[in-house]
Image 1 (cartoon, rainbow, N blue to C red):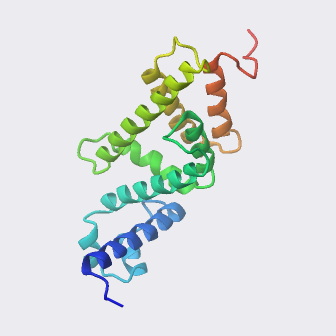
Image 2: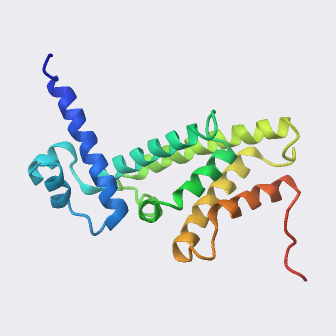
Image 3: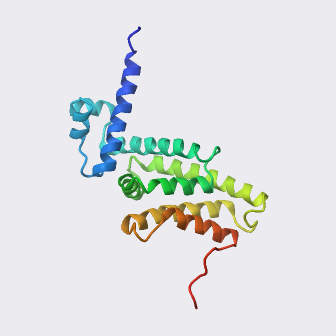
Length: 202
């Protein structure tokens, strides 16, 4: 059997680093995970780890990508198409089993607003992709008569995404009172104009 090419070995080691960091960030949190610990678990020196990732923030961006890939695999088992409103709801429900990564995602998405942040472009592109996919799904639902024509697809997509992000933050603060998936489903029901629960009495 031929020896693995150096490039393939490098890619395999990079993937191992990301997998280990994902597990550590999820379990311990971003601030309590050190480069030294990641390096030790993948049998590298800190200098060796810096060969693959220049900063911990850069490593975290790759962890976010890996998390998205894992969510995509979960999503593909649920809905066989680009991200839809229903698919976003399923992902939010799934996130309830990963509080560590949800906490990191919320924190890093806020920090990415800094122009100097390594995570900025990741979140810009991620939001662009999600907005485009969900807006396209809203247009399909409008054509099928499932959503009112008066809704602006781009605006509605942004509002649904904002609700998903906000619910994740509320869930982190009070998981016993906030059911992220159910509340996002209720929002979609309200958009359809057929709310399942009455509002508060006047």
